[in-house]
Length: 258
Image (cartoon, rainbow, N blue to C red; front, top):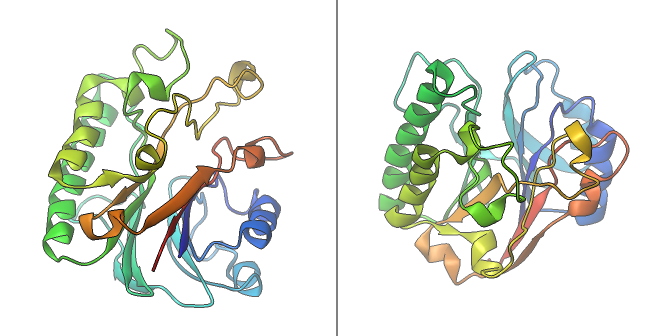
C-alpha cells in the first residue's frame, strides 16, 4: 500500500498538478490538506475520473481536508477532531481504507505567537494527543498523516534566524509533536532516513526559498506500532514543488507491505 500526504494549497487551482502527480505516482491512499474549497466546490468528477474515491470536509477559502482511495471508497469514521464540539475549522478527517485507519490532519499554523492562534494550536495538539491515545488502544493499524505545522527538530529547517519567533519552531509546539512519539507513534520518514538533515517538505514562495532550498519539514506520517515493521520505503517528491503553479508543499509518500 502506497500512502501519500500532500498539502495542495487550493485543490481547484492546483488540480492539473494533482492529477498529473496521481497519474505518475499512483498512490493507493492520498491525504490532502488546505483544499480551500467547500464541499460543493470539491472536484468530485475529476478525482473520480482519475480512479479515486474521495471523502472530504471542506471550508470556504481556508483549511479543508480529504482522503482519496484508488479504486475504493474511504469508509469515514470521523469528520472532526474530537474534544471540542464548538471547533468549526475543517482540519481533520478519518477513514478506513483496505483495513487501515487513515487520519488526515491539517494542524493549525499558530501565528502570530504568542496570542489566541498559538493557544488554539496547542489546544488542538492536546486534542490530537488524546484522540491518538484512543486510536492506539484500539490495536488497529493506524496512520496519522498530514501537515502538522510543526518543525520537529533544528535539522528539519534550513539555517536561518528568520523563523526564530515563528509558531512552527517554538518549544511548546515541538514538545506537542514529541509527546506523540513518546505515546508510541513512529515518524515514518525519520525511521527511513535517520541521518538525513534536509527532509524538507515545504518551501515558502517568498525570498526565493525554493531556489535556495530554504525548506522546512512540516508534513509527517506517524505510524502505530503494528505498522512499523511493514514500512518498506518512502520519499519526498521534491520535483513537484518546482513545477509551474505548484503548491508550496511537496507530496510525501511511504510504502507499507500490506
